[in-house]
Amino acid sequence: MRKSITIGADNWAFRCADPKESCEQSLGGKIVFDHFEETAGKKIRTDGSYDLRFRNGAESGHFEVDCQAPCG
Image (tube, rainbow, N blue to C red):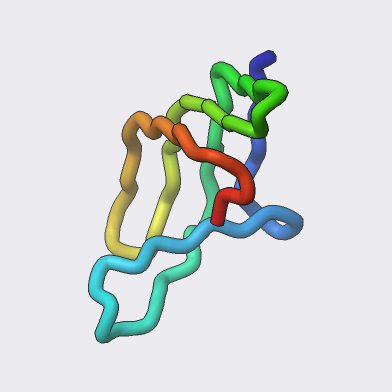
């Protein structure tokens, strides 16, 4: 399952570069989930990429999540 989320008025993204400073909201961009798996034991795995724009430039990369529910 591939899902794309556009970051903007309805969906927000933030980056928090320093735990002692405020987080910065993205001006726009996209997050793409390439795979999503949930097993009977509530193990969740997903991966994808992100491309986000901020006031001082852009940030992009790949992410992977592998956790036992509840995640968060």
